[in-house]
Length: 579
Image 1: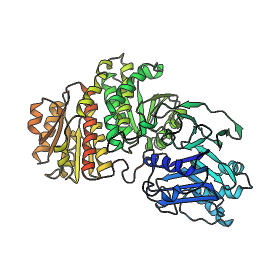
Image 2 (image 1 turned 90 degrees about the horizontal axis):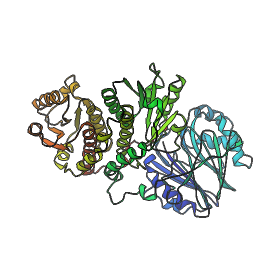
Image 3 (image 1 turned 180 degrees about the horizontal axis):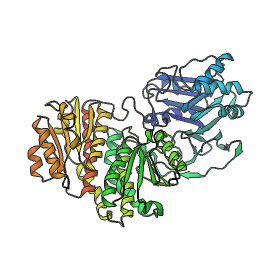
Image 4 (image 1 turned 120 degrees about the vertical axis):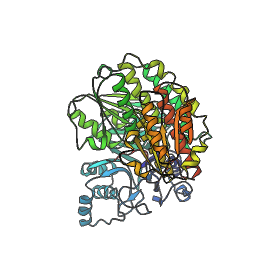
């Protein structure tokens, strides 16, 4: 769960790499490092974020180099454990994203041969294995070393005296940017968009050689051609555009993201086995899991078909009986648990569908079918617009499977979100900022909305927040309600409205401060609530998306007033590429 970048071309590599690492910080930010081919291999690596600490890296010389921004898995964040890692003679440097599962065994064997290890990382075994096989040709040394590595890797290697980068991938993303007589290698395209929109996605077992504008790719020793893709994102898409944080920008992009995703999907024919599914299993993690839970509620109501929902991280090890459509949801397309779950589903001969945001990502090569959400680059670690884009894809599936019964409703969803973006949530923020614990409650499809609201609050404000199906609060959590424990409840017109009112009154009787989201004009709710947040008039789909946006804003403004680092919450990374 790290970001890597390499550059080979006519420019000074260090400046391009440093700029790229700043763009990749959402993938990891507890340490960083750069290595270039200057007078030998020149290295600068440090604990902490690259922003404000890049001076030493910027003075490195050379036109070829590699860089890394880290989210620690093996070894604490410090200067020594930061990448790049060097061999015993400081002639070879490697950066790596992934996990080497057999590193302990490899390390013991290398130490017996006399190799000296400096760090606690699994990555360092890679550079020593390459050193062990190195006889003046880095490409051959890497080729001999890769079969010894068990696990996952996207790695870049350079060697003194060889003006080129060797790149390789297995179960971890790596894309090559094709510029004008220059080449880039990176975890994704965000650090490359300033220079080119042309990309080649490496596949598992690919090994690539980047030499000042010339790209050669081989797989299992055989030269291969990988299709060049044109990336529709622009450099402006990965900038803040005047907003205080990426998260704020991405919240405000959601009405357009929903509409854009629906328009794109309607231009494509839905595969028959998806359009006519009679049961489904969703596998996902985190925010994507919550989107899947919304799908379950809506699909079972509209289509009258059973939908199972499983954590992808559990599915691989405790596979439930499956003989139906399996849908994997992953914004990055690289979520290791979701990819593993889809592979498991295919072993059971189930048709599989991937829902992702990233063209050419790993999940697209695992699933039988792929549907893309049109969210554009999402830089903030806390997911917002990708959740709304996932809902757009999932609702489109239900719409097509039901004979377009949701089409009219979906066409008005964006207007509800636009209305919510104008709300003043400062009274609710004032309550939340003083709380140590907050409960979020909803019923039916608003239960996963409550889960997502709680997740956003805990991710970026560090306030302990939990989401509950409202009827479950009396089965234990009631003991925690007090004057200091706010409840954020979602209560909109529908079959559960009256019973939700009863749940809210029960909570009010315990003295808890009540922040209630309900349809505007609802005088009964406004009279019960300590703070009433009016949602626009509309149907269930409008209320689901509008309430989601309101809870994202509540979390964002609470975190902002507390002075938190909103785009880079502690201990979290955007793309979880290890299980």
